[in-house]
Image 1 (tube, helix red, strand yellow):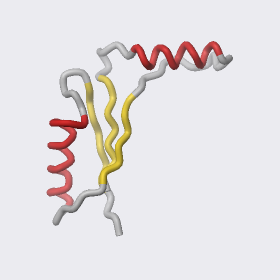
Image 2 (cartoon, one colour):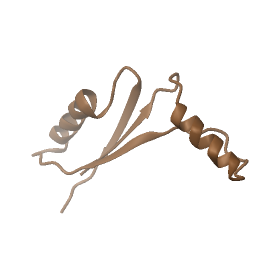
Image 3 (tube, one colour):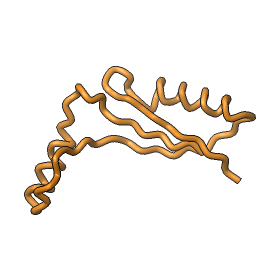
Amino acid sequence: MAKVEVTLKKEVHDPQGTAVENSLRALGFDGVQRVRVGKYLELVLEAETFEEAAAKIEEMSRRLLSNPVIEDYDYSLQEVE
């Protein structure tokens, strides 16, 4: 199984994160300094080796799951029984 996190690059403004931040403050959560909103995906895939699975996830993340112009991604892999 792969767990993929996609986030906006630090230099990209996050209007959705700003809206959540403002809403939290309006609800009385004054200690919130910054909010960034991203995507979380879990994928179950078949691969012969860890390296093959990593290569597949890299390609999926680069080609579809993220927009490399404005987003970064990170992932972790774990074996599923």
